[in-house]
Image (cartoon, rainbow, N blue to C red; front, side, top):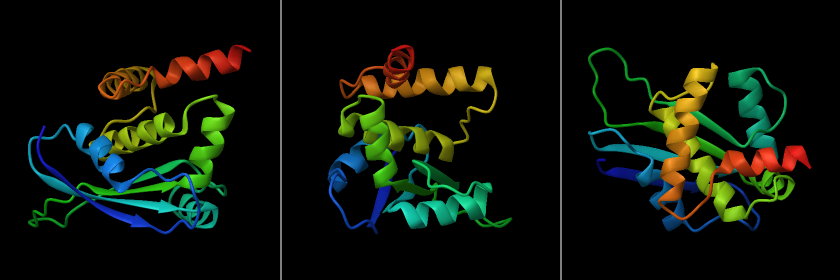
Length: 157
């Protein structure tokens, strides 16, 4: 694990956003690359999340986390991982719906987004299993349980 610089932007005017130091800690733990890099974590409200999700994914609704990996032009090397855009109201609603502690769900969203910036994905089952196993291991470092086990419990009830 190498050093990661986290730039923090809070464009959300409301409660429930973890301290910048926590976001940095979670992002750093999920940075698995050898080279130092930089990421921007931007906290947004529903409108900005929905606009970005529509523009980049064709989905006209807000979402929990969007990952924008930095793609340097040919011949240019810049130590930028990319940007994470996290929608505070969606994260809070999901935590409530899934009966999770808010800070636990925030940590999961940061770890999940950071893995996406490093090329991990969950489009097919095999990739999803690998990514989820890594998320579970990284979150366990902070004493957080399996975020997917809680989801299954809620679905079964």
